[in-house]
Length: 173
Ligand SMILES: O=C([O-])CC(=O)C(=O)O
Ligand SMILES: [Mg+2]
Image (cartoon, rainbow, N blue to C red; front, side):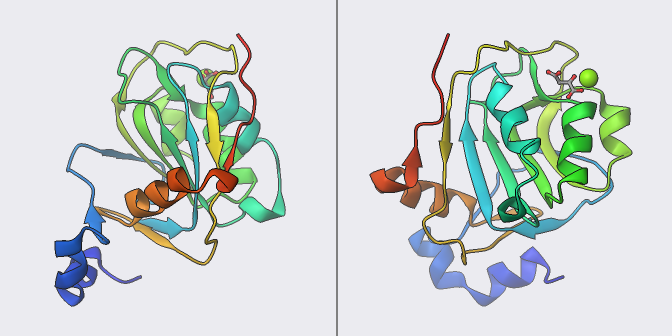
């Protein structure tokens, strides 16, 4: 595994242009893997984790080794991932999950052989209405290293700019 520090040192120009960006040190580590990496799949939700479950339980070969980025808008009012979802992620071969939001069942998540980064714990479960968006990566070859370093935003931005890559999954309330 390449250290994220070494990636930053090797690419100062990319850091300047913003093509290489690092996570702010806001994330806590959960799960057995503190460091993990992989191409990302991004789901955007707000206080509702139905789409997160749909992705993690899909058992699709295409998701093996990938990192699920859950853009939960930074809400700390409820959890978007818990022990059951973390176990699904592990069993279906995801490398890890990054949650811009909270997790619950922390002891159960810590028993899973995946990496999870999240803002913190919340014991409160989320809504179950199924609102949100899933973004598919237009460049599946673009990998990310998730430790303290992220190419995630870059990929996320490209996806936002590419309408074809944005799949409206299900919006029903
Ligand atoms: O059901 C949820 O919202 C999250 C949860 O507790 C789990 O994954 O175990
Ligand atoms: Mg639970």
